[in-house]
Image (cartoon, rainbow, N blue to C red; front, side):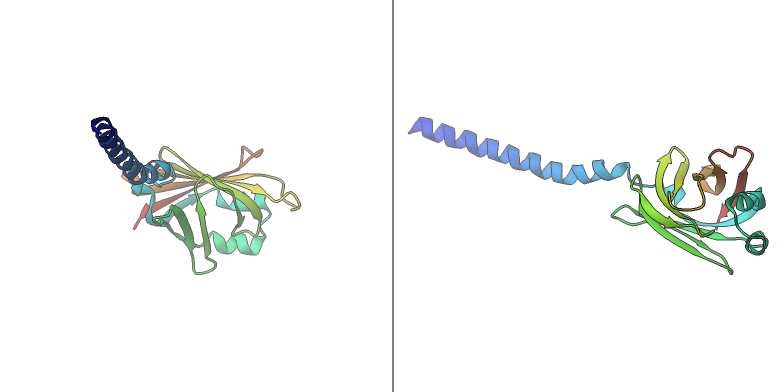
Length: 181
């Protein structure tokens, strides 16, 4: 009888330890899994464009027509970046002429319709103080170059430098500076 009682106590203790392990795993695992999928706080918020260089040449290289280029260069967009509890990032750009809305999960490809009318397979990632979007064109489209949007956060996250480049065209580079509002 005593040996059965000791075995029962050992099983109870082991069961308690197992339940505690499972409970702790359930509490800690979601934060470990989603930690790399979270934007740093300094990347979220609203930013208003202050200056822009090289944007006309960038749009020309993308095949954007004269009329749309002319209008786009007179606008001062606001970008709003947020992330919900499930890790979904929302990146919206607002202007009086045309606004764009996109949402995605970091590291997961999605189909994006760019403001200039391209359809791309896009993947976003975070590298230090940079939010990077790589936009690969649809193989059936007329445009064959991959583009990159790098949002570099400086000045404690109060300034966002949006750097636009085209793979294979090193002379084409646009830098648009946004300030937190």
